[in-house]
Structure formats: structure tokens, C-alpha cells
Image (cartoon, rainbow, N blue to C red; front, side):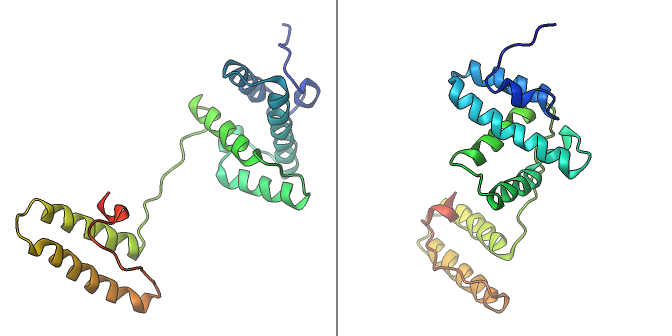
Length: 170
């Protein structure tokens, strides 16, 4: 079986991530990336493979954001991070997820007090928006003022909100 020629072939050969890097190279080529950009991206990812090998046994399916963040910190300590490297790492992880090699990121719902307040405020305002009563905005504001006064002991500082604030209305 003859291997396809990819930019940075020598750095990829024998790498822990070799198979995945070749698949990623094909995806990059199909997306119209030039050899120089591909070589840069694949070189970074080859470094990731070497770093992973040095950290101990790693299964590709366990590649997650926290490992990429650790790798970025390592590269920063070595002063080897370049513009676009973080994006390349995220692009590679997204590629692995699309292929089903790495599971989708588990979303942990934000359960902070401020998120709860915003959620309650949005809910009340959306229910009040259909009302023809002019007091609906006043009701929303008084609710928020009361709710925000409860956050002060928690050390949460919140700017003054209006019913038409985009953050709260969405």
C-alpha cells in the first residue's frame, strides 16, 4: 500500500496520531488549504502527538479540551506558540468529533446564581410581553431589583438591566 504524499511527511511518520493526521491532511486539502498552511498545521499536531506520547499512554478517543489546554501551556512555556495554533488544535478536535473518534463535548449547564436570575427575569419578561398592561415592565424591573439585592451577599456584582437588554431578552 502506497502512502499519499502530505506536507510534513517526515514529521507525521510514526507519530502517535499518524492515521488521524493523514485523514486531517486530506480534509484540509479538500477544503482548499495550501501545502504551506497544511505543513504548519500538521507540524503542530505532530508535536501534539509527541507530547501526548511523553505524557503516558493516551487513547485518541480521550483527546479533550483540557489536554489541548495543557499542550498549549507546554508550548507557551517553550515559547513555541504561534498565531493560529489554538485554532488549529480546535479544528483538529472538531475533525475527530465529526468522524466519531472523539465523543462530543459534554455540556455542563451553568447553575450559577446570576444565570438563575437571568433565566427567571427572561421568563417573567417574556410572559409579560404579551400583556397589554403597562405595568409588565415595572413588574419585571422590581423582580430583578429584588433578585439582585439577594446576590450582594454572594459577592456578585451585576450591572443594572433593562427589559430590552439583549442578554436578557434572548
